[in-house]
Length: 243
Image 1 (cartoon, rainbow, N blue to C red):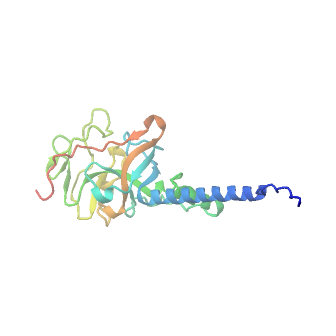
Image 2 (cartoon, helix red, strand yellow):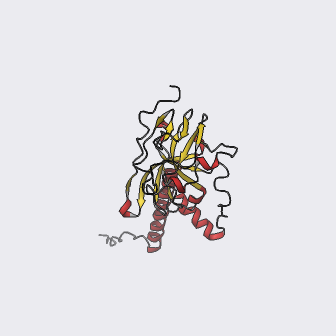
């Protein structure tokens, strides 16, 4: 009769291997999350903050906003849309700053990539589209309204004007928007250096559509102002340029 040797207990994974597997899983999760965030920022939404008072009271200084970059590829833009765009050339002259370098620059780049920072906000502008390609935009009619293709638009719901004033612009202009561009103005009409103030520049004050990042869709900060951004319907019923 042969004696049986006792059964050996199953080998347990070492604590070192378990820790390495945990670290590996965490790294994979972080990398995937960063890639998803970068893709979302590149193709869907992008975060900015408001550096100036040109859009008050619609957007206040230091408001955080989300910009829709995706759906506008299918729907296009409309009069009344509030949009963020890159400097068409000379609008922010003297305002550019050198990006941080070294570790600070790397951290800032990473936070921008995942949408947790918006340090390039001061390199962009936010305004409201008043004129689309082909539109004849003029200031002002007898009611003090900006006219688009001969029709006055009532902007009083969003304009920030001095008490008692209904004049949509203190600066006269008469332009026809070229193809592939828009005419933009700030809601804080008397404190906005918009298309009117760049009318004498080579670009004529117009913003090329390919310079537009997207349409502002959401205020994310401060929390008491959190919510979607309603775009103006003031220009509904304005005749098209062809008419």
